[in-house]
Length: 250
Image (cartoon, rainbow, N blue to C red; front, side, top):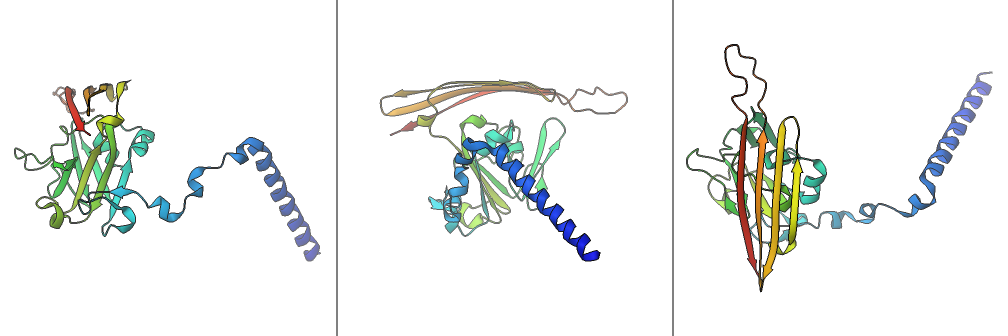
């Protein structure tokens, strides 16, 4: 009786698996089977064939870099839905980001997290964002339109041999797009309960062999909740407006 019971149980399991397979095949449809994800066709070498410049100051593939490097692409940033650079760094493994109220950020690598990221070299297109007034990186200032960022290269570990001072715990290099890749007009706007409003206006053009882009960005951040009797609870709300440009010569 035990053998018959076991045999019947196996038959029931096989029937359920067959029905599940037929259901998945029917739900997939004839058109979905032909639209295979192109990422699945890439080899491991092709997935690692991303060109970076932060590890040795020269273009090389991630596959050949002698460092713990991670590349956050513009597509990763766009799909994540973040609205600023510190929040985008939350997507990088080994990078710790915390928010100190409505305004301040603390960013660090491998546990060395401080308000001004002392010992961490942060750059935009190879130029350091070190501020002598605070002795570090003031994360409220290096805000840049995320639509214009090409990739963010992060090296977890010492980089002082290549980059000099401040690259003790790691290097973050924010690389922006070439102005020839951002031609035309771009308007972006959004709002919410924390980021109350955020607007970006960008225009790119060409003058002979020179390409350029101009941008304006403004945003307003609502106050955090502070349960302190006798004080004003909206003391850390803030807003800002900034602009900039980039030119490239071919």
